Length: 281
Ligand code: AMP
Ligand code: MG
Image 1 (cartoon, rainbow, N blue to C red):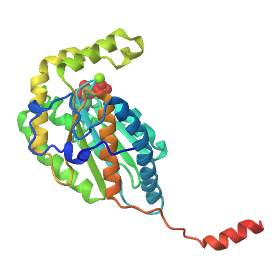
Image 2: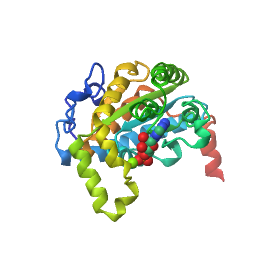
Image 3: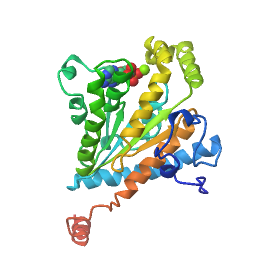
Image 4: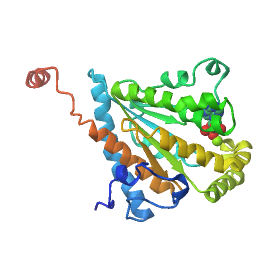
């Protein structure tokens, strides 16, 4: 298939200097194709992703110490679950470590906010996926004053220090902030209320949270301004078009895995000798 990107997703979506208020949530940065072409590209590139992930897994099985961590943030209905199902769903589940972070449990509340996060970091050879993350502790916690300002203010620095350690231990961190418009969120919530098979995803708080949209935009701006580092960059993903957001995240992961430059692990046995023994058996 022809290359339908006029610039790589990694360039088109980089958060550097970006204003959240300026994001056109219905845009498709870098991609020149239409929906049909986007869906076809997702199928094709999903296979590339799958092969690369298998290499990472094989590497981990043979003593390698690399891993990849995808951090997904976004308002309710922004499509985090769809990324997990349609992008991560194209790779072998044994190489995936998926963690979702909701309201902290009583036990989790007894500890530092990074405690539950550290426990779920991907092991060597794994593709880790965080559906929400430690960023909730500077998003919902900031918007709703769950802790005093002095406490959440400190967290940006703590997050950067933590992510630097994670990166230095061999994990490539890919952070994706998904942005939909307030109108698009209304459509998606309406659909949840119209379909019994979607009720389980709905929470009455999703409606009241809409009143805090500007505060969330501000809190997202702060994480882009303060935690967009070279070792753990943010990508800003316009997410009104689900097909685009899934394709773009696939490209970001392909780029991360490719940058590891992994080869298939060499045989630790004499291939010719084993072939000879096999034929004789
Ligand atoms: P969902 O992703 O729809 O299952 O919702 C999870 C909920 O947990 C969201 O409303 C989040 O804002 C909330 N949540 C996640 N992490 C935290 C946190 N650290 N503190 C408070 N609420 C959180
Ligand atoms: Mg929800």
